[in-house]
Amino acid sequence: MNPRDIALLELRPEIPSAKLLPGMSSEEYFQNKTLRPIAKLQNDLLVAIFQNYCRKHKNVFYDLSVEKRLDYIENAIHKDMKFRNSLKGTIIGQFTLDEYERYIQNSSALNKRMMNIVKERLKSNIQLLEYASEVY
Image: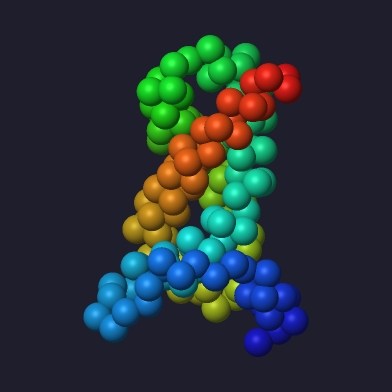
């Protein structure tokens, strides 16, 4: 393993609820071993990327009700390919070479899992996103 890969793995937080069990699908294993720890590590950056996205879209997000904000997050990730690709890059850039090799073999299913994790991270940070509206 090269020094970059070792450093990346050392940075990742442990997630006790991310179980790695026998009989798990390869996608679920990759999700719990790689995607969830990276998303947690990149949490602040993901929030900052979304805040920038909101600014570029005239801060409409901050005038919405909580329920509409959750929908806004969902729609932004689902419909805006440029934004979606930016989020994917934030996660993929933290892969080791071995993880990247595994990722490209089933990128479609793993992208779906990745975006669901990012979506849930942003939704769970709705209070941080509220605070951002007071700052800008």
